[in-house]
Image (cartoon, rainbow, N blue to C red; front, side, top):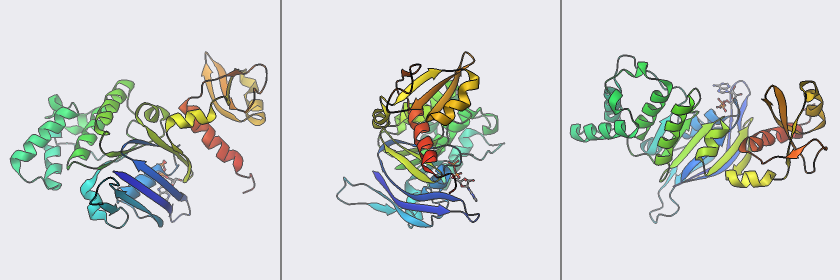
Length: 305
Ligand code: ADP
């Protein structure tokens, strides 16, 4: 499976250009779409999930390895997409009086699993898979954030999807819930295309073999996390400074991050050479990649534009 996105653009009625000529190749496996809030991630996810129209561009889902050459035109053939799509939206609707079992059974019915016996085994298997078996009779409304997300994955897996889209799945999860969710996604991502949209760098670092960074609707990076790290190796420098110096460093250097450690700012700057004596070389992190991509885009934009 492979998803080929070419020249995708979308401008909202209020003039916001949410996607600006985005082209991406997304292979089988876990693909991380990383960007800050407002970058255009949900717009892209909703277009691919057939919930929204693009202004221009194409998206083709196909199997380059297969002789039959099944290819779905994602923007045109919405019915065909929906048959192979599993979608976990940012906000999953809640059904207060309905148990997890009843809800999954209902969705399976809607997705065409009409045989009662078949549906029973499917729903039971899914509840086991996402570790909600012991809570199957409880109302979804009472679930924790992590349980709701795992329920969301269970419903998205009905119908054996080939393309799975998860939009900001770990926002609001505690570290334990996040880990359980990661493990579940890793199991699923082996044979299908999974697009994980997130503003959380750790999600991509732990899960994804390929990634893209977008901001303000533009693609800033596409490739593997390792190549991204290699690309800035030797260019990231670290220094502990006084709070009062922060502003100065922000104007005189290409500051990519600043964190408080023990109450003092520790800054990372991007530079081909050691900026001054006080800086030590830092091992680049994916967070450095993320912030340096966004920072270089900001720096490249003329202030009067
Ligand atoms: P992300 O998912 O990365 O946070 P979105 O795709 O939700 O980004 O939004 C991208 C940009 O488009 C933002 O500036 C947002 O305010 C704007 N936007 C999103 N949805 C709409 C809409 N329905 N109408 C107008 N502007 C929108």
